[in-house]
Image 1 (tube, one colour):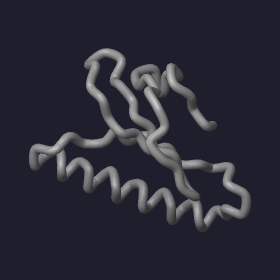
Image 2 (tube, rainbow, N blue to C red; image 1 turned 180 degrees about the vertical axis):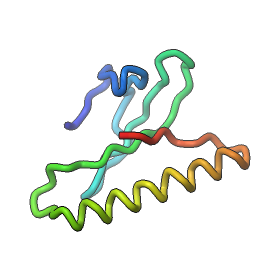
Image 3 (cartoon, rainbow, N blue to C red; image 1 turned 45 degrees about the vertical axis):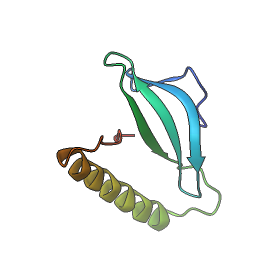
Amino acid sequence: MPYHPGDLLLDKYRIEKTLGQGAFGEVYLVTHRVLGVARALKVLKRDTPGLGSRDYSEAQARFQLEAQLGALEYAAGAPAPAAGL
C-alpha cells in the first residue's frame, strides 16, 4: 500500500483517486470494473508503526460496523460503500 490510480483491487474495483487517509486506513474513489458504478472503498492499513494486534482488532471491528451501517443506508436508498478488503 498505498494504491494508485489505475490499480485494480479484488479484480473488480479500479482506483480513481485517494479520498482520504487516517491512522488506520485509506479511502479511495473506485469504479466497479463491470458495472461502471463509483463507490468509496476503505482499506485498513496493517503496517502502521506502533499499531498492535489489539488496536488492529478494534479498527477491524469499527470497519465492520461502518460496512454494516453502509448496508443499512443502501437499503434505505443511499448508495452503499464497497467493503471487503
